[in-house]
Amino acid sequence: MTDTLALRWGPLRLEVEHAVYETVVLLTVLVVALDDGIADFGEAALVAVGPLVATFAAYVFAGVLARVSRTGAPPLARGEIRRIVGHSAQVLQLAVPPVVIAIVGAATDLYTPEEAVDAVIWLGLVFLVVIGGIGGYRARRTVLATVLGAVAAGVVGLFVLLLRLILEHG
Image 1 (cartoon, rainbow, N blue to C red):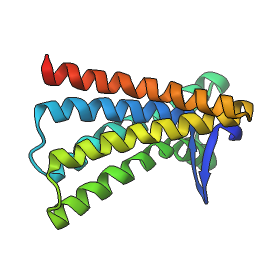
Image 2: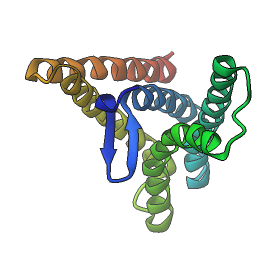
Image 3: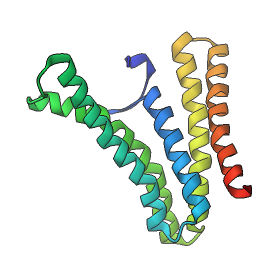
């Protein structure tokens, strides 16, 4: 993935492809968990962090496999391992908002654990639209590409909402 498709904020870097994929995976897990019920804020945080940690581990494993297939040797140098882990760790950044929302909810009792998960779902959909727009802009550098990227990401998010409706009313 090139830097033109990476979102940067200081030292943090999030590739658009990873951001879209992981956000959709996270939202899908949250929708299913919400249908099953969320007992407390700890569970709300874990149901968000769990799939991202699992995906991080999968990315590290896939990175090692890719390195072995390219070179025929495992990545033994610390720099190689650090690069693979660092590249994969970007998915863990997506866990920050759900954890903050769960901590604030637990500390303040302003909302229920289910409302916290619901808020994360809506924030995730907004995030999808924003990164879709950024990705569209960076791909073509036009307003039309920005709008099309945002709309396309919104359509992907609508599939998650459709799954939620099916689960709630099915």
